[in-house]
Image (cartoon, rainbow, N blue to C red; front, side, top):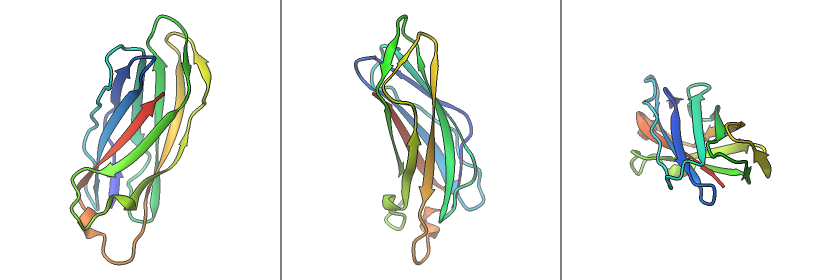
Length: 150
C-alpha cells in the first residue's frame, strides 16, 4: 500500500469548541492518493487548520509524516491547549482492518498563547502496520486523517 496526499485540508471552529480537519487520502500499491477535504465542527472562525501532504507513499510496515499548521483567525490571542489526531480507512472492506493504520506520533506545542494571525506548527507520523498474510484488500482505499484542535 502507498499513501499520497495532494492538496491541503482546511477547517475552522470556535475558540471554546474544537476544530476538526478530515483529510481524505488514497492508499494504493501504484496509484497516487486523492485530494483532501475538510469538515468544520463549529463555524466561529477562531482557528484555521491546514494539513500538508504526506511525506511519502505508505506501504505495509512503513511510516509517513504530515505537517499541519493551527492558525489563530480570531481578533485576540487564543490559548492552544493541544491537538488530537486519528487515521482510519473509509472505504476498506473487512479484509483491511482499521487497526492496521494509526497515528504513531503527534507533535505540536501545547498550552501556548497564539497571537491573532499567528500559527503553531505540528506534525503527524502515520503508520501502516505490516501484518501476516496478504494486505491486498487495502489497495486503493481512502484513509481519513482527522486533526482536532482544543
